[in-house]
Image (cartoon, rainbow, N blue to C red; front, side, top):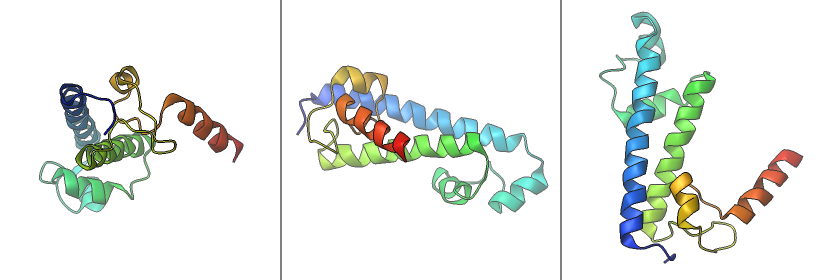
Length: 127
């Protein structure tokens, strides 16, 4: 288990829960701005009637950069929740080192230590 205390993990999980709610409020707001016919074509139901899980599945096909970013943020939160459940939260997925609490405060869904993240971004930029 990484060097995080349970109190720290609980605080970071609460931050992610707030972010989750904020992301879905934004997604619902974006869809509320659409006319009702376009909502039905996209979702097959009203955005107000759709559950978070249903929205995730149906919005995966939406070609809107803002919605895609919101969905990526939600997926990052899901991944972090899975790492918490597995006892791997705060552990770098590349090298296994601890991810500092300060980094997690700034970015609660971080899955890499700062060194591995820099290397990951260099590799990604080189593609």
